[in-house]
Amino acid sequence: MNKFVDRPRYVCALGGALATLRAIPRAIPIIHASAGCGSNISNAIGPGGGHYGSGYASGMSLPSSNVVERDIVFGGEDRLKEQIETTLELMDGDLYVVVTGCMVEMIGDDAKGVTSEFLDYEKPVLAVETGGFKGNSFTGYDLLLETLFKEFVTKKEEKKQDIVNIFGLVPAQDAFYKGNLRELRALLKKLGFKANTFFGEGENLEDLKNAGDARLNIVVSDIYGIEPAKVFEEIHETPFVTVPFPIGARQTSEFLQVVGKALDVQDEVIEEVIKEEKETYYDYFERISDIFNDIDFQRYGIVVGDANYAPAVSKFISDELGWLPALTVITDFLEEEQEKLLNSRFENYASGLKPKVVFDTDTSAVRRHLQAIWPQNNGSKYFDSFGPAVIIGSSFERDISQEFGYPLLTLSFPVTNRSVLNSAYAGFSGGLKLIEDLITIQVSGR
Image (cartoon, rainbow, N blue to C red; front, side):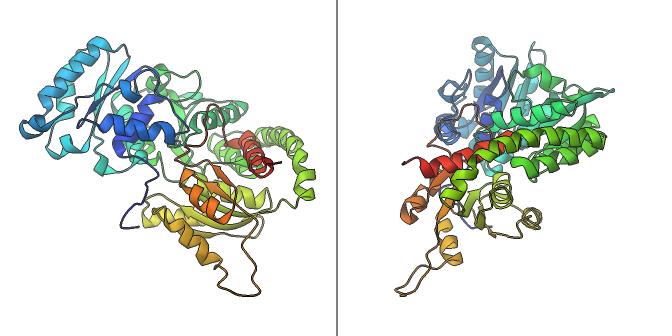
């Protein structure tokens, strides 16, 4: 792990919780933190999440205690109680969640104790301790879900055999989360299951409240959403399975096989769904065959991203596009065991290739890692330059893209140069979208 973070690719735990609450209809966050925390976080999440937007109760409309020096000295619990009362009076919601910042946790404010005074209120009022020093956006997502699963989701004795839940895609941190959830939901529907995603199209708080109906939780990540899934299993006795985030035909077929097996779906049903999806997928895929061959479309691939996107994109460009995966930089803070797990995802590519995989949170180090795999020409008369290449990363890779002359596709946070609405990279359709985008950035000047 690095000793510092240059230009972080996430916000703090408080920010992760706020972004996740923004994705839940009629959930009202109440910030208990120093003045300015909410606006600073909003200014980071909005543009970085593909211009995420404020919604009903987010952005600059966030209720906040805005504690100042007096509250830090004498305690801010009275100020929080006042803010909760005002929010309940003015903001029309169905769930109110206090999320805390660094300063109030350092002075020992008991947010949970304050919210316990509102147990008789007609709507739930919860508290989640999300001090920024506890972690980044992913941590805030996990902490919020853990609290919701403990205190909001109804415990059900009987499980509905056709219901599942999906975790692991963090709103805003994954700018394409909503479209990705839509694609995964559609695939599971073809297997015969309704999937609760909590943040998807047409979903609401009732879906979240009744999540205890599910017979299985599916964590679409090797790293994120796993701790909440453990909490869910402990409280609601619902098992979970983890599968990597899938992009394209190969990975999505594996996703369906793993999930289908966990749900006791007959092999014939799974294979029929895969066959149907592949027929559509390769019908569209065929359209790139001419341009791929005519302009020698094979490229070196440089992938920079989080623990969900980096392995999935690297495998996709290698095994489905036939590119040369040269370098993958995974930018998250990870434990040694987590790094080992992610490293295993780069083994046994169908292409027989493997990129150089590094774990580095320092944005400026990407250039150094690129130079390490292909040293620059130091005056040598005969020198093969590294190219043609494409960078698939975030807006932070713009400088490297311009310096080396490599096209850049942004899909990992921050995504400031794209406005993201319903686009998705998950599943079969997401693989086609990725191919489309990769070709577009190379022919856009024609």
